[in-house]
Image (tube, rainbow, N blue to C red; front, side):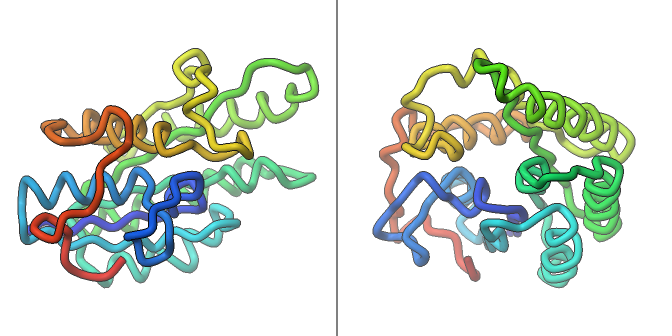
Length: 214
């Protein structure tokens, strides 16, 4: 049996990848990854605790204990995106929350996956956000190294230059972008890619849908 729990904000909740068969009307990369895990191990259990608008401190305070209680084997943590959009950013505080979350999850025996933020190109108006993302990404790399977590680095802006990878809001990945994220996480975890979609057209099949809550 494999227990996979996904933590974070709207990027992990699946915003940008609407899907009528999902309980909340969204699919996203974590659902795609759980589906692939269920193909490899039918007894897979999966819970997605991520919620939009959550900051790193919210994830640490509200989601980690619930995740630990589920006794996961694999946990993804993707947070900080909402923090960089606030008028004032305390990068040390954000990274401390993430570091604490990873430590608590690792102490329970789970393999922890950390995901970096998307780095921006283009208008000089984004210069402040670019600096903030770069600072947080540097900290995430240090945390992953220090805590021996698996790092999924999606920071290369050239890899995300294709507009088809983005939802209309240009903030969240599209269905195609979420499929790319699922590939990236699976590759980092050394999972066989198998039926992970190249064009994000995968639907849930009753024979491979993970058990447990979502």
